[in-house]
Length: 297
Image (tube, rainbow, N blue to C red):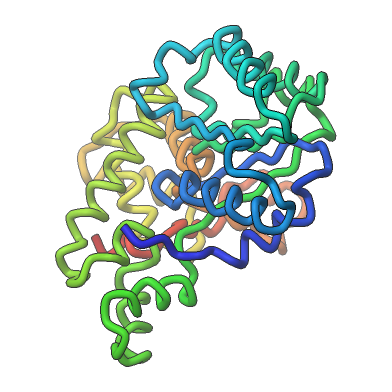
């Protein structure tokens, strides 16, 4: 699969390559965080004259790395890599949240200044709990979004260099910017990809991680939020909708489900700016989908 250079976010991260802080890259699943790590490595090799063999990139979705999914084993593995690397080492750990007690490993590497560290995860709570306590003020977080229109345009030109700009724009408005979708020659065929991506995010990043058993209810709720994207919503209106679908869900569970979708970057919440007094406690935000193509799918 051709790789699109995501220059905008690379430019944001580049000034911090060697500042000693842990670079935390978060965002919706399948938005290209793993690919971005590779682009960062190539950029560091170019601008910092770092040799290729000084980079260690581990993706913990790889079943072959199951023996490294605890803090001690991972720490020992990284120590061994650093010890045989004559130059300054750079360690990139993808989907780090799947490693048991990973915070202890990262904190030790940082405290001993063994290497430059980049980590990725698909949940906004990556910096909660122990890591927030140990590493307060020692991390920088960057969120990766689906393709912008410029990046989408670049990907479509790889397929058809003569495609009119107006068609590319209309396709982007309809199908969104999920990186895996944009490389289908026929975007209509990519509808199944979008549906699979959305369902896997709902089931894996939200339902499974948050221990939500009513995954069908969660999917129905998210479908409603996609439909209402950009409109102000209220818990009461959502409850009314779910009841019309013969779905019973408590107000607390409803708010927890919405929060889980926000934590997984499926949705972004925009608060009201005119709330005053007790109205601050009224749940009436606007919800926006991370990628509008999910609504089409």
